[in-house]
Length: 89
Image (cartoon, rainbow, N blue to C red; front, side, top):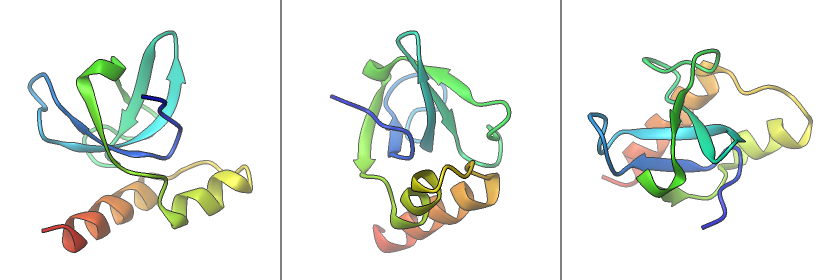
């Protein structure tokens, strides 16, 4: 699976199994994940791609910011995760 910055993913393994994250970066065989709360953008969680599952493509709010070269903020990430949860209950 090809992951991209901004995708919404779910942890499939580890103590955080079932948690939702946004991919904030991809390096050295790991993805950097942030939930905007416990794992903020400036201290993302590192996880191997085999331990996550894609939940949604890049949300419109984040794709606009990424296209403009603007950094993702914790508030943006929290908003996207909350919106996705409310639509997919």
